[in-house]
Amino acid sequence: MKKLLLFVVMLAFMIVAAACGSGNEEATTETNEQTASDQTEATEDETEEDATSDLSGSVVVDGSGTVYPLMSVIAEEYMYTEQENVSVEVSRAGTSAGFGRFLVENGTDFNNASRQIKDEETAEADAAGFEVMEMKVALDGLTFVINKENDWATDLTKEELISIFHHDGGVTKWSDIRPEFPDEEIKPMGPNENHGTYEFFYEKILDKEDLVDHVNLQQEYSTLVNLVSEDVNGIAFFGFGYYVNNQDKLQAVNVDFGNGPVEPSLETIGEDAQYAPFTRPVFTYLNVDNAKAKPEVLDFALFVANNVNEFAGETGFAPLPEEEVQAYVDALEGLK
Image (cartoon, rainbow, N blue to C red; front, side, top):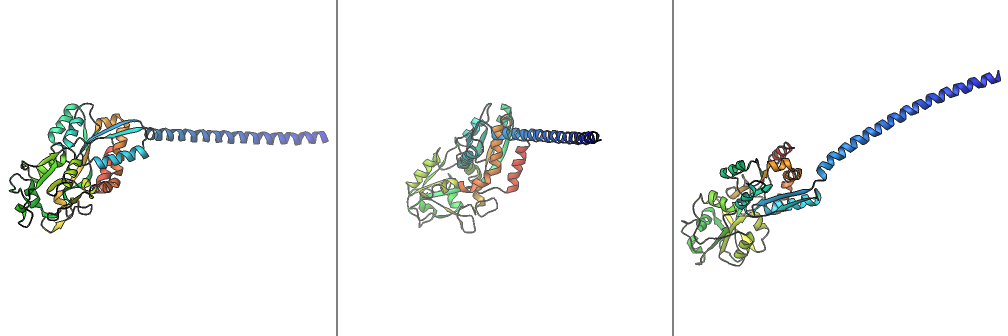
């Protein structure tokens, strides 16, 4: 009887042990399956992240000298914080010259512009076989700058400024503007025809009337800064950002549009602000086909759209309304 009882106890123990072993095996199997599933999901997430975080290649940007400071800062931030293996080259041939490089087969990826693209330029893109996307990036104020020693022309009316540069303005000396001004010849200056700033001034401010014959037009904005800083009778026009970066050498003219002089600033520049008559949007244009074919181009475009307002102010531009920026982000996301 003792042997029989011992056998029954051992048999019961073996059945319980077998059941526990089976349960542990099932639990282990389930755990292993869950771990494998988690690892698969993690791998998929990592793969998706790697698709955007490990980009390489190059992005080529050219065009407007006015937009150059803004786009170059964004490019540096992108390469430093987002995609260290992507090279973003930003040049400044000028709006029109930049379009010449952009509107051709195998051209640049972006063209910065301080004016809108023209119909004939859009036709060139069609002929080259690619789609162009316009992206407004900021608001700029056309700024007139004078020598630091000029203490008479610090406040001028819009009409007085136009008369200095208009071929029929009847102005050659400061005293032609106001009798109390010096009887000295004015030295008008500005960017040349390669620049959208020139075209904006010619088309929107002068209503497509010729500039004075003796105007000194230059390719480089830095040259204009130096010329005005060295000549007390010099006066030039360019984007607000270049003035901001050279306030130690120049002073801006406050413009009276009819309600008293307005100083160009980030607070007054805007399409509905006090400096509105001399406010203009600035752009970058994207080769959509390149963005679809090269992930690094689209990724940089999205970085620009998502971050441009953050960098606008520090480079002398007024930011865009957030809803306008979001519309560009949505359009770019749709290219994926």
